[in-house]
Image (cartoon, rainbow, N blue to C red; front, side):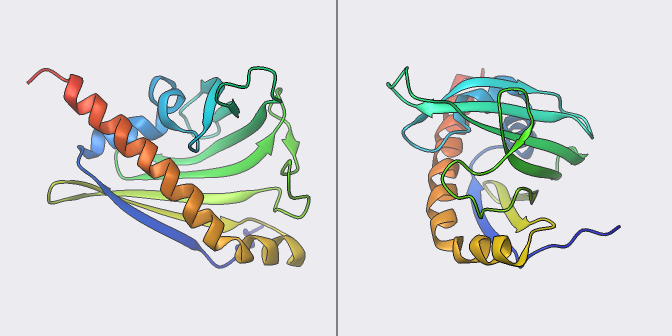
Length: 175
């Protein structure tokens, strides 16, 4: 059976970091746990099994609000091509890694497909993220497609966090 995919949401950003470091930041727990949160959130739990069929399972909370509920998510790795391509199925989750609905949007797709490509460019690495609703109902696909503007805002903030993290990693490396 082939996947039913929506129109893509695409965002790109160039990072002043080597491709190998950007790839590691997207696939290793020691990195993901440090930057992979939207502004105002913090990672409460982070486990990563970076192999095809493995998963990045995480829980986020609002920063400074210890009693807030945890928002869970999961990426299941479909493809890992060091250092240029990562394909994951993304879902909202529970603490055990089960599939759940978006906590604020019952009509958000249960699954999305994220394809990240990394290319060496002058001065660093170009990251291209393509995100699509995966096997979604017509209503879910419509909600996903109508959310592109807010996804741009969210992913821009997350990529800014990644950029700051990569700069810190570069600064702490021996010359």
